[in-house]
Length: 209
Image (tube, rainbow, N blue to C red; front, side):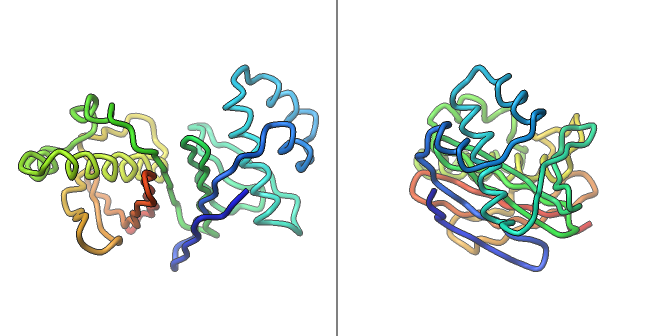
């Protein structure tokens, strides 16, 4: 498993990896209890099994001296058994993990998909649409991918069902400028770090309310 990027600020950190290991190789490098094995065996998709095992493998890599496990709240938001915050995202053979000792965080990655333009009305804010309309097609597609990952990262930070993506205002984002920027959702303000690596887009978020 190859680490492509790691980033840290005062609120947390994230690690981006690309992997080619199959499920059997990953399974041989993690120690699962009976409950975790049952969970693994419940997945019918080989892709889902690999994603699930990749996260457990990386927890071992990132916490080599601790026996760390994932726990989930009533909304399905994960955290670690040592009380640290965590956010996870997968896309193709990439996995990103964000960690924080105390700050609520979110991360999302998305490999370039042309079909994103077919769902843009479901997640774009009116002010974002104003910025998008005059842009050439290639730049518009790039902008949409950044917005999608940012809003997914914000949703994971909030972790409350019913978050309305079209009300998240990411119109301050500028592709040509700094990777650090601000988005808002109702009365909340979020800081984001967004980056593109080849055809993969990534956004890391925390709340600064």
